[in-house]
Image (cartoon, rainbow, N blue to C red; front, side, top):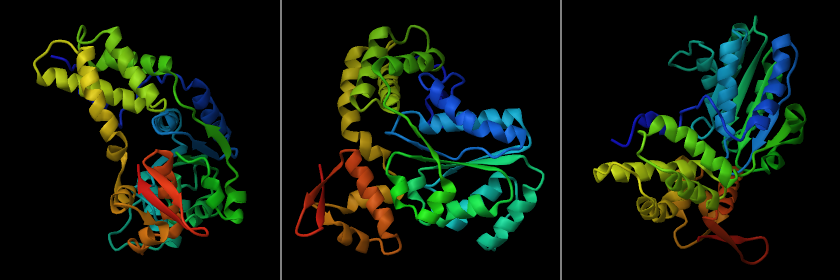
Amino acid sequence: MIFKNLHMFDDEFIPNKIIGREKEIYDISSAIRPLFNKMPGQNLFIFGPPGTGKTLCAKHVLTEISKSSKKIYPVYINCWVNRTRPAIMYKIMKSLGDFVPRRGISPDEMIDDLNRTLSDSWGVVIVLDEIDKTEDREILYDILRMLNTNIVLIGISNLNSFEIDIDDRILSTYSPKRIEFKPYSVNEIKKILEERAKYALSPGSYNDDVLGLCAAIGYNAGGDARVALNALLSSAKEAQMNNMEKITTDIVNKVRQELFVRKHVNDLKGLEKKVYDCIGNGKTSSEIHNLFPDVTERTIRNILSKLINKNMLKRIKLNGNRYRYVKR
C-alpha cells in the first residue's frame, strides 16, 4: 500500500507547518494584528507565480484568526467562482452566517444586513483570491467604504499589474501594501515534499531520490510546489495501480512527460479555459471578446495576459495597436 492518507494531497489541505514562507506569514499577520486592539489594519495585495503558496498562507492566517478571536471575522472568497458584485456580497453574508432569501436582495440591502451583523465586531478580514477576476472593481469600494467596521482587504493574484486596472478613486481607498511571493527554491520544494510525504505516504514507499526528482520537476516549472506535489501524487498512483510497494525514479520520469503536457491546461478553469479553447489557430482580442459579449474587455485582457505569463499564448503584432493571440 503506497498511500497512508490521500487527503494530504487535496488542494484544500492546509498543513500545520508551512515551509519557506515564514516571512510572508509574518507580514500578513502584522497587517491584521491591529484589529485585535480594535484598530484599523493594513490592506494587502499578494502576488506571485502559481504554486508559490499565496492562497495557502492566506488561508493559514484566516484559520489562526478563527482560533484566536470570536470578534474578528475571517472571510475567504474565490473570485474565479464569485466574479460579480452581488455574488461577492452574497458570499460575504453567507460566510458571516447571515441568512440570504432565495429571491435575492440588492447589494445595498446586503450591506445594511452586514453592518448589523458586524455591529459588535472588532473587524473583518476579507481575502479576495484571484482578485483580478472580479468583473466590477466597485466591489472593493463597497467593502472598504460601506461596511462599518475595521476591515483588512487582502487581494491575491498571479499578476503583479492588477492595480493598473483599478480606478484611482478605488485604488486610493484600497492603498494596499504589496507582498511578493517569489518562486520556491529546489531545496524548499524538497522540504515541502518531505513534510507532506511523511503523513501522506506509507513508510518505505518512497526514497530521497524520488523526492529530489519531484522537487526538480517543480523547480523547473517555475518554482511551483503544486507541480512537484502533483508529480509525487501521480507517481504514487502509478506505483499503486501497478501493485508496486515503492515509487521509483523510473515511474517519476514516466509521469513527468505527461505532467508537462497537461500542467497548465489542467490548471485552467471557467472563463479562462473557455478563452484558451476558443483561440484555435489564432484570434485578435476583439474577436475573442465578441465570443463573450457578457464579459468586459478588461476581463478578457487580464485572461490573455495571464495565459501569456503562463507561456501558453504568444502575442503577434499586426498593424497599429492590433495583436493576434496564438497558442504556443
